Image (cartoon, rainbow, N blue to C red; front, top):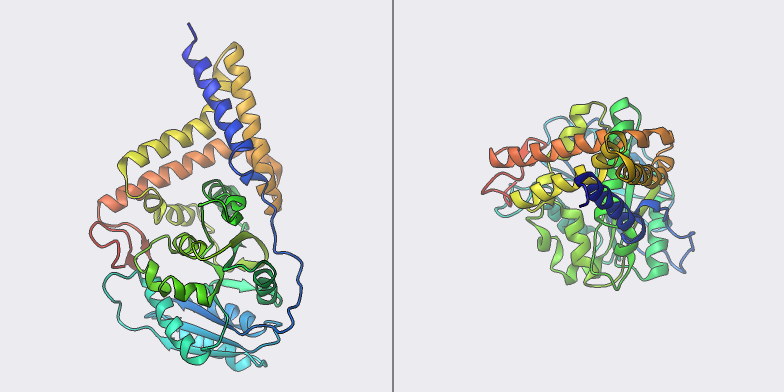
Length: 389
């Protein structure tokens, strides 16, 4: 009779065989936007950025957008979503210092309408203003107030869309990895996202899987109108992937890693990363207790069990456990190289996965206690008010 440890070791090797070979090769993702090719005429673009208490970063992000090396005039709409920290003033100071033909308009958001999440309501307000300012713009760039775009960012996004006839081009912004907590935990955040949404599958028109990264999404305006505007995802808490799914029904989309798009928002403390996970993890699981159990078991089986078997099992089970553990280390290397971190961080994956699993359980507990999805002072995933945040 086969021992339990041997059966578990076969499971561990089976999991990593699937992840390495049959999950869209997500782990070796290197896709960047195609080399820029200038169209005959650069199309008009409007930028919409929701901002809620972003005074510490919005000046930098708006200055970068105003400094874009783009031939056509860019209309930038910043929606101040009930900020109390001087967000509007910081943005206007950046605009006053800018010497550019691009234009910044700051608008205040209206009172939150029932059935909308806070961010989507702010985006909707921005799109309404954009329609007034630039009714003929072909594309709208949806980007966050804490995202820094290098000077050629918009040009590269538009070039990618024009070359591929794409309805959406989205880049996963490069996140900060400066503190110990960030170096330990942030690369895994990208790795797990890629595992959930293999970029090659997202880019494949024949694959139904869709996704996007909310910090940087260039959307074909006609496609956005075809789905009914941003109202189509007004109650979505994971709004970027919801938008990617809706837009993919209209045509091909593209998702990749960014070099020239970076987050200004750091997560310097362990608790900061914990809250980053806890505010949306249970939403990703559909608020399902059964899915929480499945997720917990799978995370432990994938990332903790191989090491446990390699250390404590005997004979063939120990050997197979070691194979699973080294497969995990191998798979994590491209992510670490992208973040310019030591390959040795892969040895910490069992502990990192345990951290993420615990934060996911906390996400469920917060939801069940009415404190789900807390972000910018709003409870966005509490029972009974999922669509009212």
